[in-house]
Image 1: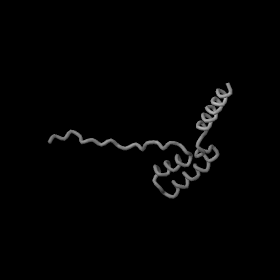
Image 2: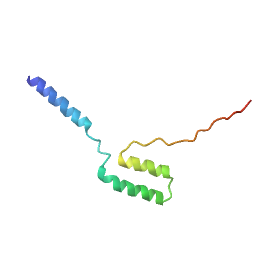
Image 3: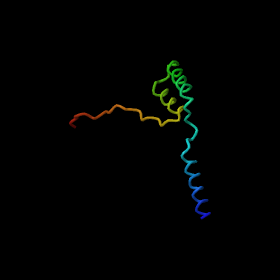
Image 4: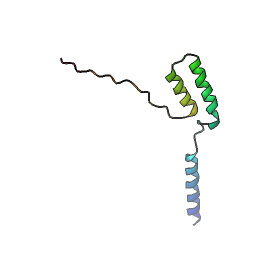
Length: 77
């Protein structure tokens, strides 16, 4: 019985440890990251680069950049 309780406690503590956030994302840093984003745009840096830095600052996943689709068309060779 003691072994079962110790094992259960270990499993619960490890689960709680892995469930905790990594520490990169901080809810209070939202305003700081937004200010950096605004400053980046004010300096004339590319908007996509500023957005990537904003997401990185917040600890969020960086979205995929949309790319235009180009095709060969209806070429007859």
